[in-house]
Length: 433
Image (cartoon, rainbow, N blue to C red; front, side, top):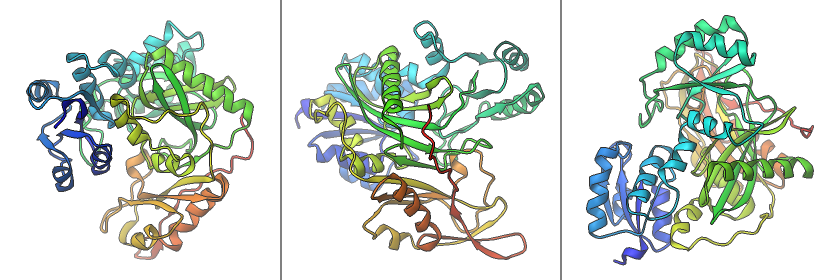
């Protein structure tokens, strides 16, 4: 074992461990008890089962592994592991992104406060500590505005206030959620604090980027499909259908944002809206994107952002062109049902996965479950990811796959059968100015 090729990996999927081994790395995996799998135990060179979100538990294990067998880098590409991977970087002076910069990404209050002194167009934001703060923020900055957790993901706990009448309802929801776990599957993240910030209008996009020694490369701009009635994401498409001038503004906005936050190395996933004031950042994460966006990017650009993130600390990452070239299109379509319907069966997943133009099929719905109203990403029934001749063709193909091949059978309260569908998306024919 060569310590110079040894990686301390804080949290991972089976795929992440597999790709680290493909790179020839010796993998020391810190894995949460609810996430460890037989495949990870088979692939990783050592597995330490620990709640890796707790630094008091991670630090002594990291010190022990540093002494023997040793490691040259620590990283995480999963949200709950980012801060403690950064702490390990700082503890042993490993380079990479440290805790101070990682905290700017992870804590949205810290991010907004940091940007307020650097960006003249910074989004107005304040911590939410009491009921009266809602009224004060609305009076000072106007309506609508957003309330959301400071460090959650997947649209959980996000509310829009359109006027003073919404304050009591939103405050009740904040009190209900505070102290609860965000992820209905693994419960790795705890909701603690909330933030108020101005509402950004316009269609939503995400930007997938890779940084090396302060050079930021925008790999892809991803078109996102949302609904103003909730904060669940209904789909994604690559490359985003933007005109050249708007694309340039998006790239400049995001690279400037990354400079201000102080990130110099690694992958980032930045969410923006393009409204009347141009592109503005909603939030960002120094990790890969979720929702199969990595599959879309690899299909269209041939760039594996998971491997990039793992390879970079060892000098193994490929040097990217300033502007990677797109080949074709790819899209994710979310699968949704009517609230109150009951899932009866799921068919066609294996058949769909065998098709040449299908990148991924992930159905979370299980027979017997009741379809919930859409509030956040965990309320969806699943997703499909496909390729196409271009972006528009891929969006259309994803919708065809749901119902034609992948079938989530449901029944309503009267026992009448039906099928879940691909969430409807808007035809974005007008490029934002």
